[in-house]
Image (cartoon, rainbow, N blue to C red):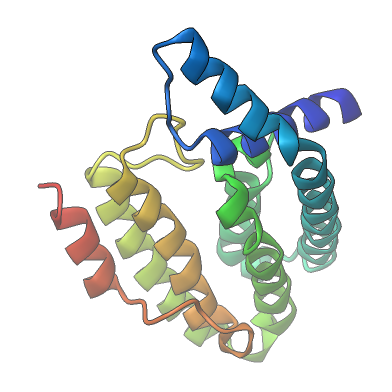
Length: 194
């Protein structure tokens, strides 16, 4: 619902503005409240505009998946549908966080591009999907979940978004991954906490 979405956006903005600070005195609480209140509405409106872009891109990706339904492409379409469900779900705004929300429309455009190009070279898609499955298994073996758990440690949160960047680097190179990414780099991030 709209109310739930706005509530989710408000919590995401507060999470970013408070940034884990927990005041232990009344004066500290009042100072944090004043600081947070000052830019709250502007930040909320900005985030809601970003969320609208995510929802639009999500609808486009969903339509592309539905239009491409074919028994020959069952596995990649199921993978694309699973990716979409791990990106946009009830509570995705706060779970993703303000920073990651900026990249969500790009990830969703990547899904659309992959699905639209699937008939061009299904063998290549299968090879790339195998690489994604390997990376996802490493992530899950380290304790990661899709969607990302609220209490995920920073290295798992970083690895979760690396999975999306890896997908871009494989299926939609023209959209550009945010920095170099590979299964090996993902493994290194996951081993930081091992």
